[in-house]
Length: 118
Image 1 (cartoon, rainbow, N blue to C red):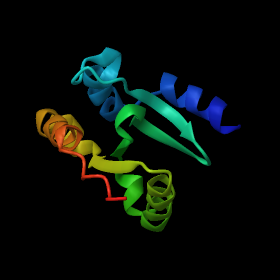
Image 2 (tube, one colour):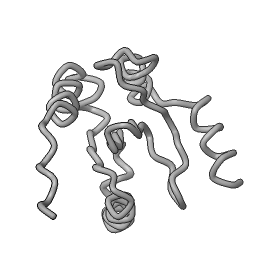
Image 3 (cartoon, rainbow, N blue to C red):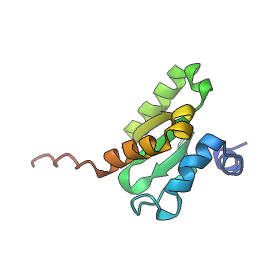
């Protein structure tokens, strides 16, 4: 299955830990920003992305304990594309939703670093 077909399948089979933040991030509900879910990015599929803010939000289950090297490589590739990756454990997303959303808000609203001088 190619990435696009896989992403579509993932959108229809979201886990409860993915459904919870999606409720808050979808339809410009979160600070008026547009987030997409299960978006193919090169060889990967990201859980949530706000293209406008170059921000990826990943919701990680227990399998990520066993794929640390893969996740590191993936995060490095995404960073090379100019994206910041935030990772949250399923448990935190489900049990501390407001805290997770606050962490995302703090990153989104942080002032941008000044542009380098010419």
